Image (cartoon, rainbow, N blue to C red):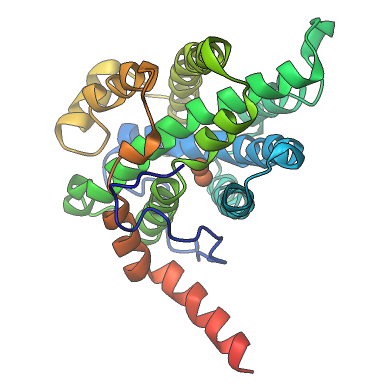
Length: 306
Ligand SMILES: [Fe+2]
Ligand SMILES: [Fe+2]
């Protein structure tokens, strides 16, 4: 279960009914930084379908969870991920309104999550329903390792503030990032609970990461290339390049490779637990200050009083 060393690790997890107004957010929401803007925008391409799929997989596994605390965390996780998915999908609508349609890319993401990783194994692969569920739970847990690392990074990414990044987009990313840190252990705990015991459980957890890391890297390069190539303000004059990406990293606009890379061997440790990732305290502090989260809390408070 969540780390005993962290004094606020056991606080309840639940969705915040946030809303964001996108009307004033420019296409290049980090001014003059199209590469950094679009590398981060890949999140909006992947998360609507990806997080919807997380909810489906955990819902499928929920009847197997016998621990009441974990059950409650899993339900809170599902509520948070469902909210993230919806809020990122609104950004895709906003991109389309700015003449950057994304369906040509997102239909591949939909195919990945709905068909390849759907309720039944693809191509009639002969694995039992239980093993297929365990594999998908291992995939969710591995992806959540990266969302925790990215969430903690974005909460510390002063470079984005210095560059004058759009405040609404920053609040979306940091609200989401903070909730990722907040629920960083849930998918892992769910996997451990439902994934059997001993070496087979550990081997499948490693397998989840071995599949996730390269696929995610590939989707990211493909997504950033797609967005830059189809950006109407760039008019096809620019391409995604590692050089431009690294310059954005140096300015603190994108996470350092080392921070992403070291998350992988850490996850392979037999004794690993995600409660060691990031700072829950920083996340909770951001959620107390986030304009969208505060407005959502205010709306809940007003509803309770009426
Ligand atoms: Fe999320
Ligand atoms: Fe998450």
